[in-house]
Length: 153
Image (cartoon, rainbow, N blue to C red; front, top):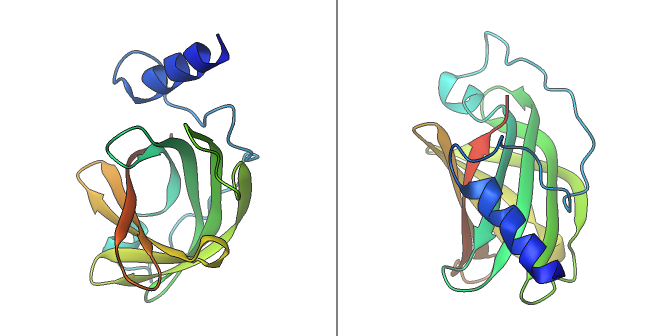
């Protein structure tokens, strides 16, 4: 029954028009203020500002709710915020659920955020209204999981 409820929740989270998008219940993240990008912030970097939610997947059975909150930007290429993740299915993740501060750098349109606890790097790009991301192995650069995240209001 618990598995069925989790799957229903995931479906509601990613099905457009079915339910309001919000941070999943298993993602431990308090409401955080967002500092509006200043006039000195390049538009390419300013596009990342805000609250993003999605579900990491390996394209097969792995699923993990996530939230990335970019709270503050610094010219010319820096982003600061908080990353949070929920329970991983079907196999537990030793780091999640949790939340922790992150810092990233914009490099040729890709926001790169290091996740040392799992020896990975998140690579995020804006595509239309979505935040597309991939988590890659920090040593090899091999893609591990991907996400298509939605901006919260």
